[in-house]
Length: 402
View 1 (tube, helix red, strand yellow):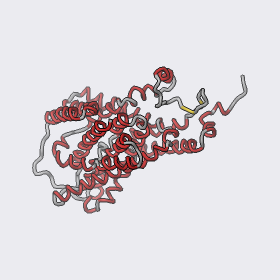
View 2 (cartoon, rainbow, N blue to C red):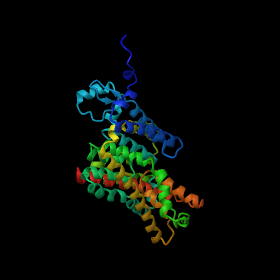
View 3 (cartoon, rainbow, N blue to C red):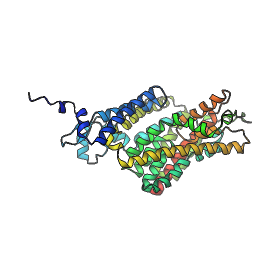
View 4 (cartoon, rainbow, N blue to C red):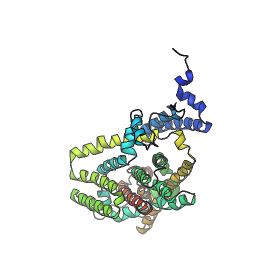
């Protein structure tokens, strides 16, 4: 038996001392941040389905660094830079998450699965009951997506990279993943990680934006009941899904897989195919969400996150979400004036398409001021419209820039 070498025995610790100090500090920070995400997920301050596996993965990837054969530091989780097929076959035997990354994440399949699951949870009747108001609010809530693009170009990003990070303003994780894969393959990992990190903050941050922009007396507005209650049948919802899917695929073929996935989920829901509903909204959606959270966590390796280019993405991502929230509330104010004070402007925040988080934020903010005010139906209509508008804008970016 040779001499016992404690350095080689506990390489995760020893690599802290052999790596550049900035990388080591970054690893420690990300381990702590991972713990914070797990805690906030457990307290349901952030979305637990995504944040708990993401936080644990973030901590594990930055703790489990070892010294590889060539002396470089690495992990046995994922190597997102692998492109040589012979090397890939070797890595697949070792890196246990590599197959999940290669076959579902790096090609966008996981985004389609998540979108299909979301579709089974959406009741498009809320949109069809108030189509013009919902779509107007959703378009206003794309302010961050639209304005962040020229700002990002001004900050030195290429048009493709600028469009990818601007999509964070749509607050639609699968859409950001899709756009960055199509336009910015070299940056799609940090862009996607930044997007999901910030999307988790919408539930905690947007209530403060609402309080800042909407006075208490306006937050308490109780909207009058509609003069005529529209009953939207399942057949009408199914027809809407079919027609909308076909039209959007005709207009924007580059995003056809996402349109198809979303409206297939809606069609399954409205057709009442219970076996498919249980499969897609249950095991498929939750499995995809679990692996999405785990992959995003393990991709938060310090060497990736501390890339100087990522700092710009962090700034632009939060700016995009902030501007989208402001745009949505401004849209709510416009509807407030058009209806002569009968529209609660808080609903505007739901146009940011983080389904159904921002709709819940709107209802919760209103309920605190007036327990008798129910804005959830209108908020969900804007929320569902936001999903569609963010998909359309992503398709426009990809069509024009790719």
